Image 1 (cartoon, protein in one colour):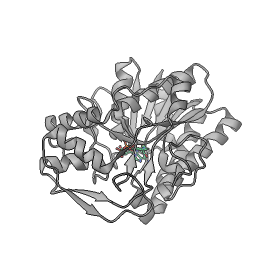
Image 2 (cartoon, rainbow, N blue to C red):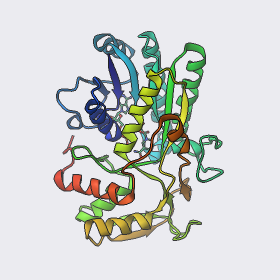
Image 3 (tube, rainbow, N blue to C red):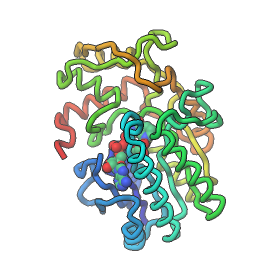
Image 4 (cartoon, rainbow, N blue to C red):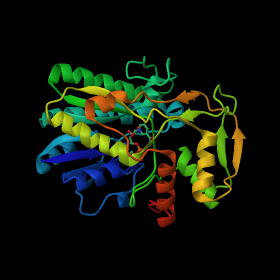
Length: 328
Ligand SMILES: NC(=O)c1ccc[n+]([C@@H]2O[C@H](COP(=O)([O-])OP(=O)(O)OC[C@H]3O[C@@H](n4cnc5c(N)ncnc54)[C@H](O)[C@@H]3O)[C@@H](O)[C@H]2O)c1
């Protein structure tokens, strides 16, 4: 039996593949490499370059590798791009996601762990955000994820597809071999570190007049290895016959942009110039998880998600692989 990991050549997917294999699982990766890196997946992992919406390909993979569960990371995930090109997001994330789920059901694969996001809450009505907080995304990316959450819930009721939808807060950090390398990079931690190496002249701070203690936006950063481990626990929960659920993955601690930059200055001993800029539309002031449910349901507790460990791990990775995965 094997696990199909879609988007396994991306950032969180590649770390999850690494940790699933370390825990003795057989893994198969399906990724179209639109945003991922072939070099992020070890050569001895069965790898298929293709789209998750290619039902014939998913059927073939499921049969050839005796797939019994799927971790579905594959998605486009830039908020700004989703506002400018919503069709691209609905077609890639929703339409192709539906194709994937149909092909999985046809192949009798009934366990799915799905990458959802705190972006499904939009501007949250309460912080820390519990899973019961009303969901009203403020961009097509968030909607594309919420639609798939709803589709999974309907497929559970009608077809018995059991799933765990994990709503990540801000993934960050690296393992010894795998780290964050998006092209272009919109995430704060890699951009702060690029300003530390001089690769970028400065890091942009979007918004300085939020209703937070230092005026900059507060986010809940989770170490990517902790996120990966939550997927392993979620699969175990489903294999034990556990019911479908929606779970936040965060730490319950928030850090402002300025706090992240200050911590990075200590970790890297670099000056890290910061440039204050206008806030980005739709960026809520504070996104912090109430992550107690994931602990209750899965027994998940982040082990290395303190800010220093996150920044140090990504800094070490960057020093070891200055060109990350190289030009693709
Ligand atoms: N990075 C974060 O902080 C964060 C936060 C919340 C949710 N998420 C979600 O987690 C998942 C992984 O995020 P990431 O940061 O690793 O992104 P990523 O872009 O590094 O990885 C996504 C991977 O999916 C692949 N892909 C995209 N569409 C595909 C398709 N139709 N068929 C096959 N492959 C396809 C890309 O090539 C890429 O390798 C995404 O679903 C994202 O929405 C990420």
